Image (cartoon, rainbow, N blue to C red; front, side):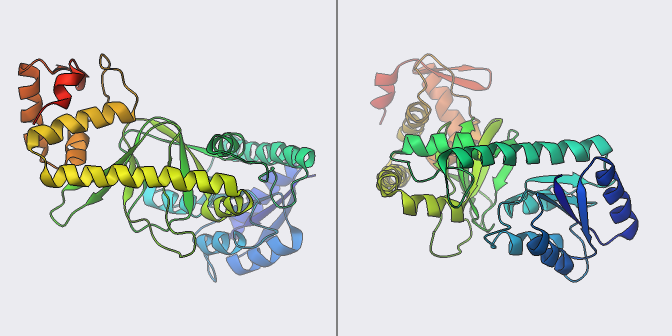
Length: 351
């Protein structure tokens, strides 16, 4: 019988939810506030935790932060149950490492669906653990030799999250708790200057990592990240990512080389923004985006004009005027909201 810990300060909600879970053949432990909940979690080591957010003594965010630092509780699936429905509240909970978020009043089927899916995932991971004999996590993390192995590890073992076009994945100033790998779509990283102008600092496509910050210091993200189109990303706690790198030095060295290449690209982009003409900046940005996304010259880059202008470091209006010039010169064609590169070689020679 699976054990569930329910942490909820509202007595009526706590008793009714506990009864539902017991009728579904779960063994249920309850706690009336966050402090009691932490004690019960360490004592009972449940298979799953359901926790309210707004509680006396210690709120749900605090409970999750404390339990995620404990060796024996950090891998227990954690579901927030709360009346707080604003996106920023949901994102805060997910950023701290929650596995799911259910809003009150909830539908019974929604609750059981969330519980069953999380328990099923843990069961699969535990089976993998039993096969490979991992001593710390539910999966093997000691046989990774290359970045491709690391990406396969992400695909096999890490939770996937979806973000719609324009949706923020993390904001500048958020705690840098996670490393991300894109499984589908395109993500941009960017900063907003004092005048409110957006500067795109990077574009990341499918199979790219992003979100790297210091592993030794608890630094906040220094830029924001958002979906350029509908995307799916795999998200791993930075502490677990660090543990993997420590056990797999070959992967660590390859990752360092990869990040060094990214730094060189950023330096070239900054030089272009500082010294190139508007036409040169626009041409280089189109070519850079096509190369980054591995787009053939007869395909349409699917990215907004404002994002491309942010990469080039020029005003959107100026960028659009230059695109019109390029179209008139036969270098590109504009199809609806998309851009088709017609002559790569001539675009390279633009001054």
